[in-house]
Image 1: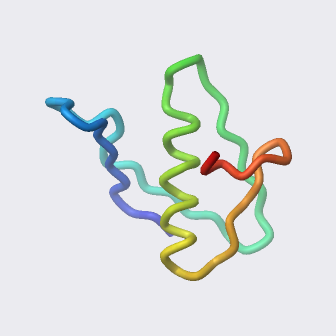
Image 2: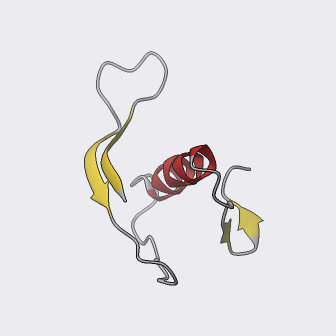
Length: 68
């Protein structure tokens, strides 16, 4: 569970993403769909960072670690 996920690029006046709540059950699969620049990779990167902080394994997106 991730609550109130917020992300701002360095030097930005406002966050690029704000107030995103995400719950993924064990074994559940999630797809992030959207237009170019809509924040899909940013959300995936932030979720992966939170998983790493909880000593969880990172996950792959199309075979690539999303932190690359």
